[in-house]
Length: 111
Image 1 (cartoon, rainbow, N blue to C red):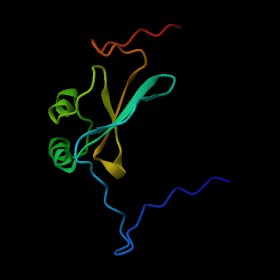
Image 2 (cartoon, rainbow, N blue to C red):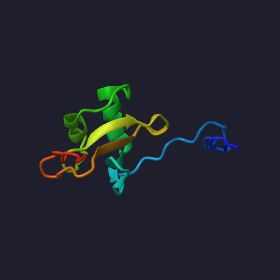
Image 3 (cartoon, one colour):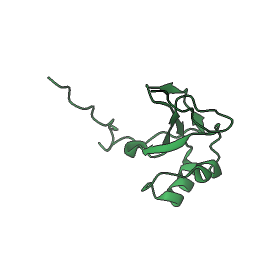
Image 4 (tube, rainbow, N blue to C red):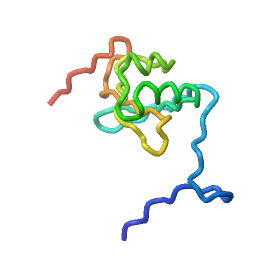
């Protein structure tokens, strides 16, 4: 039998979902991968998240020049690929496995 999805964390005071926690500086996750991509997520502080909301309204993915303009620093080849609706200040990035971090070019996959 499938498990029920987890319930949002609620504060005891007002029974609303808990507010997201924001770091003081941009935080970068370790990289993780599947058979096709490597991934990482980046957590924005509140002030930078506000700037991001002004750019995109959280209605579209950010272009590379936009996320770099917010101060996100990472090697080449990464793309913002998904908006995590519950915590929109967390940017989800991916790039094809084998991407050269200097050129941003992905290796051609052998078949």
